[in-house]
Image: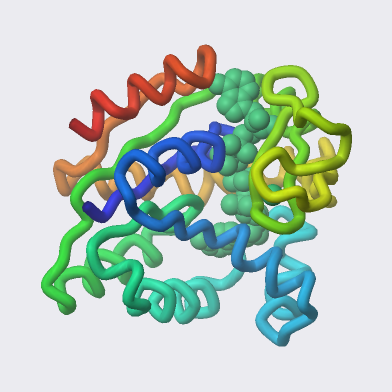
Length: 213
Ligand code: ADP
Ligand code: ADP
Ligand code: ZN
């Protein structure tokens, strides 16, 4: 099963991906997490991505695609994958669909989490993220057990530098302008389903299970 978990920043993609990947037995490919790992390690790819990420803009399609195509070709992705935060432009979506076809595979399902902008701003302001595994927490809705320490891996849990109000607003603008047309693209292919992303985390997991079938 090749699944795309779609939605604006803060919609709950990372939170729900953690649940779905375990249940479906497929790896999570989160482009934002991959870029943050490169940033931390100071690789050339990280350097290329840095200024875009800090401004809340998209990393150029060719740069993202090179990375995703390489990841999809790895053996653990052969029997399926959950894409989180990719595709974020119609160009990226076209490249993905073409790659799947060329490799005798297909995008099987796109589930889109819908959350109003004001709720997204509130969620992201209080989000905390594990520097090691990318796990996401929230000061009120999903706190860590021990302050500053990841429940899952023991890594350091911090506030992402782009989770400040100004950059969040820029990311939402990028989403509405460049990313939301991806949903229309997949709807026209008959692949997309919209899921209400407001409610408690368990109820949303259940809505996603039903949508995926
Ligand atoms: P995304 O990966 O789509 O950017 P996250 O999964 O990181 O979103 O969630 C954004 C923030 O909102 C995190 O702090 C997360 O703990 C919190 N969150 C996730 N789901 C919910 C929910 N259903 N209700 C309230 N807060 C949530
Ligand atoms: P969020 O959890 O808020 O949805 P991500 O962690 O997925 O954010 O992405 C963080 C940043 O990484 C984005 O603002 C963007 O600069 C860059 N990025 C991640 N995925 C992509 C992508 N598919 N295309 C272009 N840029 C991306
Ligand atoms: Zn962790």
